Length: 441
Ligand code: UGA
Image 1 (cartoon, rainbow, N blue to C red):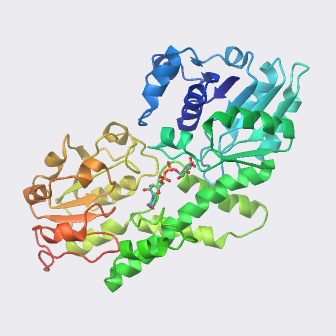
Image 2: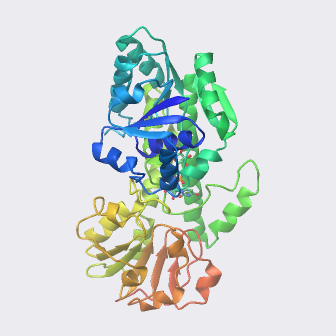
Image 3: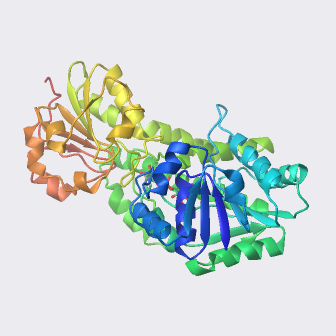
């Protein structure tokens, strides 16, 4: 099938590339000329394992095209995917400006019956608005239908997730339009769930909000475990064996970040508010997450009450491993606090360092290697569980001024750390005290 995808951000690009891989002819459209030129050469603007390889393959096999020209991109497209951003507005609601612009663009340019497929995460009711905008602005005598087809990919494993998803949700009020989208997706061989448009829109928000709730819940449990000297990892394993609970997304840490959970939880609170419903539980989830991002600072101040002039290494800057994405990363809050407290902060990330420079304070210093970050530092904070960091040679911590390690992602087993000359604090697990005195370094 001929397909156009508008927007080559994270969702749009992965969608376009995956659809070309299953045999469709896909044109990805973006207004950013420089980005399009690079993508034509198979260069991905984002770091995502396996993406560049699939891009190159499908470009070479003439199934994947890139253009800035909407008219050219829409020409002959039986389905047009909307995958532009829906950033967070100051009040937490989703900004739909880009989505609405694309809808007008589609309406004025299409010359054949078309199914418009919304991939962007949009508040419940938006697809009906999109349909109205399309119908009001149509220039030619064609029929247009709208289908909600939310995305469930995770950054860092998006290509794998595309071909191994748990479900494909298709929300359509017009059965034939829904059939078209089902047909497009058949080669993925992923179970399809069909519903109406509004329920599909809600499935996306409810899924992300539920996962965020699981994370905030286990983080609250971990804070209690901390105080009781219990081990949250064992608690999560024991809970997760109950099939009704499930073991995934029960990793305690320093809260969720990224472009989705923080934005979508706040948007759902707004969506509820718009229909006069106070989503108290979700408000709690958001508050807990904000509090959790500062956990390591509290643990550090407990050991080094005055951070002025102290050299603090921060390992891992991206919001999670296998991505260079810095959006809503805990490192933004943590490094700002450290700098405000007068510390000298030296950061390291295997992939996100370049991106980090535009998100973090200019006072930050960056290390080329983990070794360089650790040497002579007074404490190390671990914010992202990259494999490089998890596989660190533990005796490297002894190159620090004092081996105080505060791990926000429980990267090391307590058993392993007990054998080291390291003072080790993690999340929801008993601390290993190498020197119990308050540090006067
Ligand atoms: C999330 C969802 O997992 C995807 O299903 C969804 O499609 C996507 O949002 C989206 O709406 O586009 P993503 O933000 O890429 O995906 O990343 P996750 O792997 O879900 O992690 C989100 C955050 O939660 C990270 O900061 C991660 O460190 C944190 N997390 C995750 C935990 O703290 N504990 C866990 O057990 C799991």
